[in-house]
Image 1 (cartoon, rainbow, N blue to C red):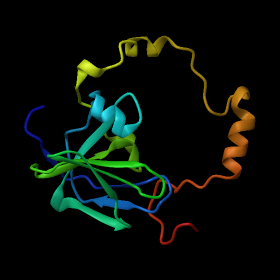
Image 2 (image 1 turned 90 degrees about the horizontal axis):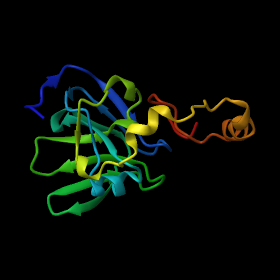
Image 3 (image 1 turned 30 degrees about the horizontal axis):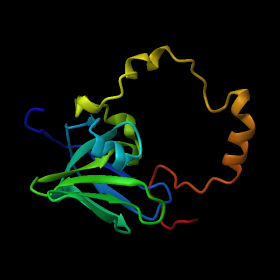
Image 4 (image 1 turned 180 degrees about the vertical axis):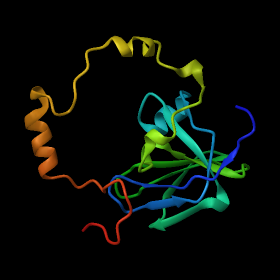
Length: 164
């Protein structure tokens, strides 16, 4: 990835339960996914999706993340209450990278690069050909109704208090 460009773009995000929230007054054009095994384990998924925020542009607006030192030069932040992965921090860098999925509007930051491709799942190229179904389809309707009726997930925007 070439030198990161600082974007005059604001963003906000947080964990699933709302205990930790953050705001960024600027972002970097570094949106990427990493397939390395360490990121897979940290995200609990096939890859980690990340985007950079300059350190001086990041403010924790509610709570503070718990930290796990995944290697000597790297810390990873997460919500101690719900477990949501929130950031990757290479300590020698002038920025840290938040998980794109923790942003309130993740679609604004599509990945521009892939790293750790040696760890990429060999069947990723088959995903577009798999059957697709929305969460409101008939086979999911009972589950969706039960989940919606008891949803404890923080909304994708800042709130004065949480839980409401």
